[in-house]
Image (cartoon, rainbow, N blue to C red; front, side, top):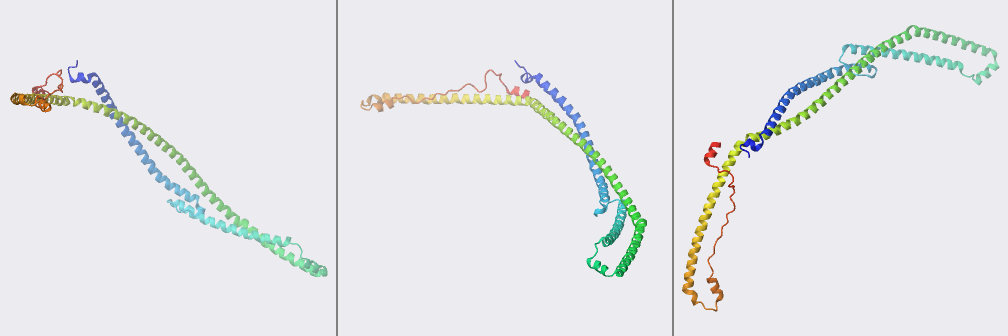
Length: 334
């Protein structure tokens, strides 16, 4: 039979719980330090990415401004890019002026060719048939005007070759250089974006790993809390046992007091019944033989014995098999 409280609770099991609780608590303390370090590194990496995102956003805006020079894009934060953009706009306007001049000259040549290739008017043909002299004069005038137009076109061709086309090629070269610069910056930003996305993916993987560790640590912490709760109950077991002993003492005192009062009440009722029985017996001796036989019900009632009370006390609340508890024992346990 168990001799101590530890024997009642299972000392080996409690010591096993205590060892497991200490092991889990030590593991939690170590993991908490690692978790704090991992969280600090992850938080620093996220803040670094956020700061880099602000700076890269400005560079991206500058590149978009350069790439959208012909679309009226807003000014960037880079003075060099703004100056290049303004120059490009100016050269684009010069190129548009050259193109407009070339288109005008082209339309002039087209009109001249259309006039020369137009079919002969019937009225003019009839007039030519009526007089050969007038026809010769008209052809001579037409050839002279055509010669003048061709001479003017030659001057325009020379102007185009010497001025317009070189200027147009120079503007195209500058625009191409600016386009190459925008393409190079766009490529660099694309590579930077790819690298940033890979870094963000790495951070997300770290966050998922941290979340998984937190779930494991939460389960481990719940287990430690369960161990601590049961061990705390065991720690309070002596106090609980002393309180139970005091309760047993109180209940035994109550049972003794109740039994004493019950016996006293039974004795008082028995004495009262004896007195009543003696009085009824004396009454029947004095008047019972005088009752007429025609009143059997009255005679039956008068001959009854007094009421009596039977009290049954059940088994005691505190079994007698338990060792008796004395106030001295309670004071020593406390």
